[in-house]
Figure 1 (tube, rainbow, N blue to C red):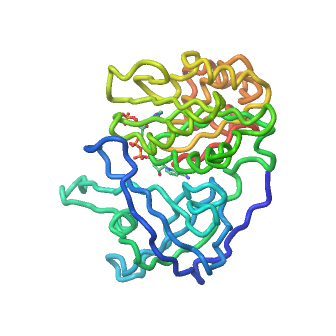
Figure 2 (tube, helix red, strand yellow):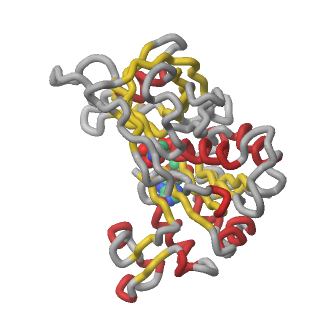
Length: 312
Ligand code: NAP
C-alpha cells in the first residue's frame, strides 16, 4: 500500500477552509434522499494536496449539543481524485446525505446536525476541517498493476468516484499497459437516487472498454437491461460478465463501501466465484455461504488481503 499523509490538522488544530460549491449529485429531479456534492478550498492549509481517495476529513459543526457541549468532529469520505477537483489538490469534495428522521417514540422530527450543516453551506462559508484520516481503504501504490471491482451502496460511492478519476484521468489514455480495468457496481434504492450517474457514464464511454458501470436498483422491479440489475449489488455475480471476468483474471482487488450488511452478500458472491479462495478464507465450521452471518466475518469467514471493506 502507498504511504499516505495523516492527521496534518488534528482535532485540536483544525484548518479553516472555504466552501467553493454545493450541488445536488443525484440522478433524478425528485430523488428519495437529498444528497449533495460539497467542494471545499483547502489551499494554504496543510490539507492542500494531501488527500487520497478512500481517506476522510473531519468537519466540526459550529455550536453546542443538547448538553451544551461543543459539537464533536464527524468524518466524511473525500470523493475527489488525488489531484483534487481543480487538478491542483486545492479543492476537495465530499458526498453528503441529509439525515432526516423521526424519533421512534416521540415522533418528533430529527435532523442530523453535521449532514444538514454541510448540505446547507453556501459558497464562501468557512468550515473547520481536520484530517486526513484513514490509510487502509486506498488504491495500491501501483494502481495499474491490478484490476478492480468496486461495490458501492448510496454515498458509499464517494471513495470510488475519486479512485476511478485517478485510474481514468480525463484527456489522457486510460490506464497504463494492460492493467487498471475496473467495474463499479452501484447500489441505490431508486434510479433517481443514483449518484454521479452522468459523470460515471461519461467515464465509461471514454474508458475504451476498461471501465464498466453497473447499477443495482433495489426498489424498482423493472430496472433491467445492459448493466442494469433490479436488486442488490451482490446480484452482479454470475450476471454481469465484466465482474466475473475481472475476478477470474488473477490480479483483481475488491473494494466494498456503503451500508453495513452489504459485505455479507459480496463475500458470499466472491466465495462462489471461480477464484473464490483468493478472496475469502472459510473454515469448515462456517458451513454453506447461505448460512453465514455478519458475526462470522473476520472469524470463520475471512476476507483476504485482496478485499477491502469500509461499511457502516
Ligand atoms: P441508500 O441510498 O439508502 O442506498 C443503500 C442501498 O443499499 C439501497 O438500495 C438498499 O436497499 C441497499 N441495501 C441495503 N441493505 C443491503 C444489503 N445488506 N446488501 C446489499 N444492499 C443493501 O444508502 P445511504 O443512505 O446513502 O447509505 C450509505 C451508507 O454508506 C451509510 O451508512 C454511510 O455511513 C456509508 N458510507 C460509508 C463510507 C465510508 O465508510 N467511508 C463513506 C460513505 C458512506 P433497500 O433499502 O431497498 O433494501
